[in-house]
Image 1 (cartoon, helix red, strand yellow):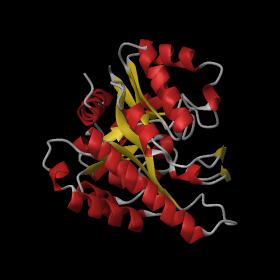
Image 2 (cartoon, helix red, strand yellow):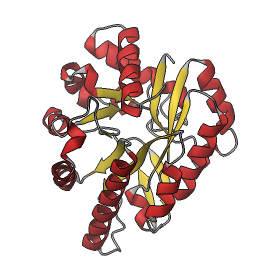
Image 3 (cartoon, one colour):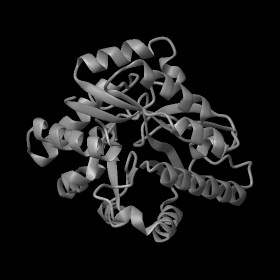
Image 4 (cartoon, one colour):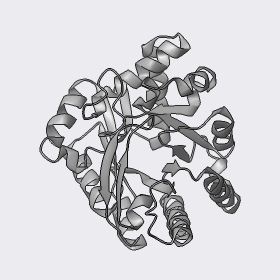
Length: 285
């Protein structure tokens, strides 16, 4: 694989009609993918897709924080343009543990905290507490299965750092391994925040967001290449020059290309390093 899209949602309804076509076309271009679950249904579907292909397609399972309540969300701006509906799901540890037993499952995720999308009609503090509890339970599941975690965090970094520090303190052995134990997906913070996560034993991942906002150019110039991965967050965050269209895993090429341009190095070097980072992180063979 020349590149690996480390965070793709081809298991979402946006690909209901052509997911397999997109997967086959992407693999033909030498690009692998991690299909990421966000609730039980999409986690199960991610595994079903991964099991169809001998190589290059892997799955993760997890319950995204926005799926802990009923939410209708719409976003326009630097974070990308998107609209979605989330339906409440009660986290069932045993159900996710059973999914995580399959060989093609390479991480627990997408899990984390999201205070941006909380329904304002809800009891906000109660929702935050529930998000924290479910997030910690899934961290424990990942630890039990010896799997890394894919972490979503939006407008909740203070609480996120506290939880991850507590988890690291409780499971000190996770930082003794020769690889990171988690990734901050679609990282949108600054250099200071990035190093706080690095010091906890995590890495960060960039999406097409960096191609249509210069906010992260300086961070990209400074960040160690062995601490990053690249992703599409398909079908969201479509990179330039395809912004406005549905995103897909093959477009991870433009994320790598943008990083190469900012750092003034070859795209081949970015591809080689980020692909090796992904292989190591997800223990891909």
